[in-house]
Image (cartoon, rainbow, N blue to C red; front, side):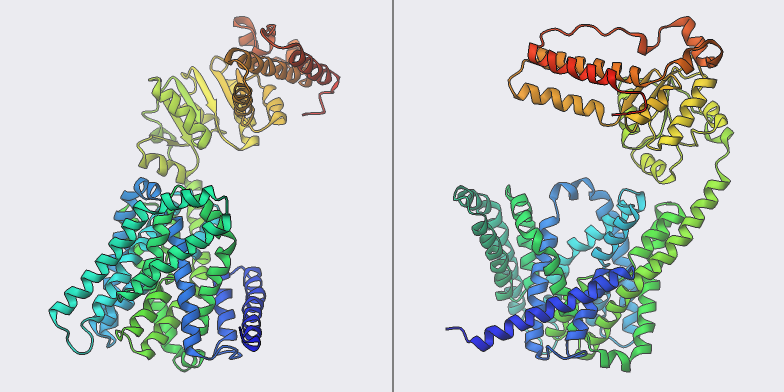
Length: 630
């Protein structure tokens, strides 16, 4: 039987863990700081340095070990091979440029401070890693994940995450040279065991996981699949531990293998609710291992080492930006978010201490430095971001010289905006062999386009002189593809008044925006979701057994009825009364009919029920006033 007192202790410990996290994490988030710092402080508070609720070092190490194992598993599960292949150049090149110089510089400094080369190498590589969770949180909060520096930073972080595998394998091998020398045969045997264990895990994952999960899926028991997944994780961790390697390495490999399984998404959904709890468990256990008394006694030394670490990492990352010829604002931001030591430093440093590479005092010192860098890193990043914004503003105010910027800008089509919408329009035009000039006022987007071989000119489409310099007077078609509604209306007005012979195609956000744009008589207004909704509706009808012809007829009928409703909602009197005609409308009226004048053709092949529904929708639209926009 289970001891009732022991069960009560376990429940109390769980309550203390969850209560400390529930208090500290919201407080830090309210202060604008990372949740990770909240977990660290919560761990310090309930550990030996705080209220001493947990005092047994063996218990603390066990908790930290479980947290580390699950943390590495979650990281491995999220890494997709296809994503790694797509980013292989940036991952390998930028990651190597960051990791190797940073590690060597820090190793040299630490050796000057008295550490052995083995200890210097382990500490250097541990703190050269960056905090993935903090960096990604900053990028997501700023909305900069798709910016150039965001993608480059993510590539470096991926390289670091992948580097953990060989690093965790390297640390035990370095320990072979510590203390009494071992026979060469023992070293070879140790390495052979490690390689064999990795091979067993990889082969089992490659050939056994999918058949096993297929069998479990037939049982239709989700909890069994979750249990087996956790069994695989802990089994892989235990196997690596048996051959003298890190348990975390086995968990990471298990995550990678499960990420490639056909049942990855099912497993990820099962584990998702526990993700935050597992990460919190890890960081709280790290906080409990930080000795505040030691930190206070060596506070000056800790702060000096932390400042040195931040400066070295910031300088190396800025140098990478200079090598890549990135704008100052981009590489300053990237450098700042990569300065904190990473989560894996709290994995590597205790492992090195356990293996005898680091002394207990050195472990406490450098874990404190890593924690302080995570505390100061977001503050440094916020300050640098403010400076980068001022640099960008100065660059925008200075602006490029128009006569230099558009000297070779010639094309049948002028595309304004190179976002997700404009990129697809531009791709279709280029595929057809049409000459295209593209302008955008987003410097980051222009740089990203250049890295993929697209020529995008810097320019504000709301300026008449920019449009003329970009070739609007010679363009046959002008496509306005920006997502700023007010700016799109202003550009449509400028084009309508000054370039009447060019066909004007405009992207609209919604129906109300489309009605506003129609006052400037574009040749085509495309609402963002309208056409895609029609396509989905047509495919749904086809899936329900309707013929392709009937589904297409219904699509065209809905499109034309919607056009009729737009006409009824749009007050045409103010643009069709003689004296109010714009120059562009007057020119067009003499050469071609407007799209709104096209009659609606009767649809064919519609069932009576469908026709009745569509007719009812049209009658309802007729009763609406132009002020009520659907």
